[in-house]
Image (tube, rainbow, N blue to C red; front, side, top):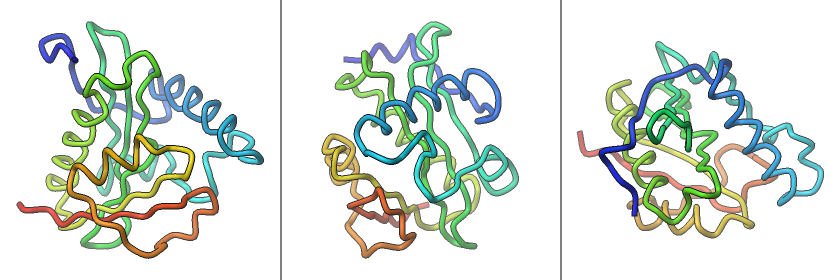
Length: 159
């Protein structure tokens, strides 16, 4: 299980370190899972600018200063944020870091004024799907035409 005392979550830029390294690792992993991705991270953009203020955010989870996970929020519409580029380093999977990050991204969505969150995941990522379902996300129809996604989810925020 994770050691909450050792984990920190900080706002960062997806266009600078450590975001660049984490996102490159995510792209390489997705490239291996989905033929033809070629490091493009899918056809749905989530640029560093989109995951920045005033409409977005990018977070990095670190263990004693070592980056172990990242994820971003971008604006989908005036009431909806979209979680993108959520990634946990392989050695940290299964230890609660993904849920810790997801909860922090939900807080960011609320802080940004969104009432809903949307996200998608691919068929080759059953652990991500299980995480989202266990966190209260409900399946919805394809909302973004991401050719690498097989599951689309939405959650209404309580705040």
